[in-house]
Structure formats: structure tokens, C-alpha cells
Length: 295
Image 1 (cartoon, rainbow, N blue to C red):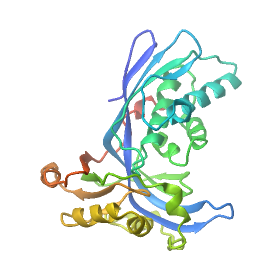
Image 2 (image 1 turned 180 degrees about the vertical axis):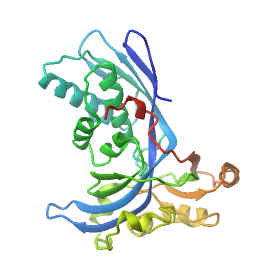
Image 3 (image 1 turned 30 degrees about the vertical axis):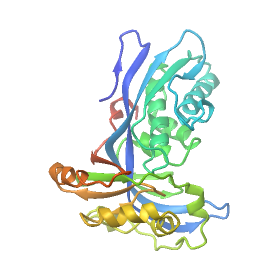
Image 4 (image 1 turned 120 degrees about the vertical axis):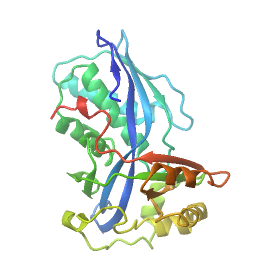
């Protein structure tokens, strides 16, 4: 679903912001400024937030949905809208304001990239509604100012990711169904990267190394640290490992396993322990809003 735009270009509803999984995540070094150098494959899945945009008669950018623990001023959707508006102003364009509504389905603090994806979908939708005329590469440059994961969601396809997350190369990934488990906690990303015991020297790989299949390739270097610090993450990995190869995505707390069929995923979901949340999600080859991206 790419979103439904009205003929008068005043609103764009039903805009999907998909989650992502890190099929693997290696820490291959650290820069002098403290940022870690990573390698990963980001996989889009159909678990998604849904955003709705309505233009206003004034110039105010407003999030009309109340999200606990996320002040509107800190929300990446609001910041993305303001960033695009400022970029347009530098070009002599003056966009109207907008109301942003969010149906939140991706858990926050789960390593699924929900906030970054929401920001990317905001840039895609408002580039269309405001008729900003920005190319995909320009939106990606804006997105990087909001976070290292945002450009991936603007690329429009699954990707081999390097650097601090900004170096992207599109890669094909096999079709799969995933079971995603959230064990009821939030894992702070900075805490994991500060841990002295974090592996920071995994040998770098090349895209050709993934040619057999990125599913099951490598490991998540953050997983051991997160599992020690947060026992529910370890519990979720152990439980899901009884059904398939389970690993953590991002810095946690969500863990996932891949299955060949929807029925296999359904069978696993029927026995998710109380207190955890579980989803089945299908792999996506492209971003749901890709048709609105200008190359």
C-alpha cells in the first residue's frame, strides 16, 4: 500500500512505515570519534506503522497522535517534516503546515527501526504532498541528519549496510516468514555500545560472501552483551531457538527466527509465553512507498 492521496493534494493517508530486521550485525571497528563501524544486512518486513498526513491552512507541523514517552518535539516524524520544510525554504519554497497521525504497531526500543522508518515515510509522503521535488538521494542526505538508519528506509530495497549505517548497497534476500518476539523490555542502544566486553574486531566480509544466503549468515555481535545485561532477551532467544535459529535484531530487545511458510510461523506464535508479544511478518523485497520515490 502506497497511501491514498486525494485529487486536491491536501492529504495522504495509509502510508506504511515497515520495520527492519538485522539478518546479521557485525562490529568491525571503531572510529576515533567513538562511532562503531558495522556490517549488516537490513531486511524489510511487513510489520509496519501506518501514518496519515493532512495539510493545514497555516505553517504549523503538528503530531496529532499521543505517544507515551515520546514528546512531539522529539518525535522523528516531526523533526523530519521540519527538516524537509527548512530544505524547501532554502530553495525559496514555502510549504503549508501538516497534521501527522501515527498508528503505532512497531514496538519502540525493540531494534526494529520503527522511529527511523516513520521518519523516512514522512519524508517520502511530504515530498509528494508539498511537491518539494527532491530526489531519493537528496531525501537520504536529509534522513542521515536524523539517524544512521533513516537512509536505508529511503533506499527502497533490502541492503548490505556498512560504515555507521550510511553506506548502502541493495541486495536480494530470500522470501521468508519471520516470527518476531518482544520480551517485554526496552534495551538502551548506547548502553550496549558502551560495554567493554562488546566485540569490536569482527573480520569484515564482502557482499560476495552473502551469495549463498544472508539468512543464517554470521551473527549479531551485540547479542551476547545484551543477553547478559537483560535476562529476558536471553530467555527469548532460548525459547525461540527451540523452533529455529533465533537471534536478536539491532541492539534488542526483539529476537526473531525465519520460517519457510506462514503455517510454521503461526504454529510458533500459538505458544508464545505470557508477558511477551509476538508477531509473524513476511519479508518484503521493496519498501511499500517505493513508487513515490524519485530516482
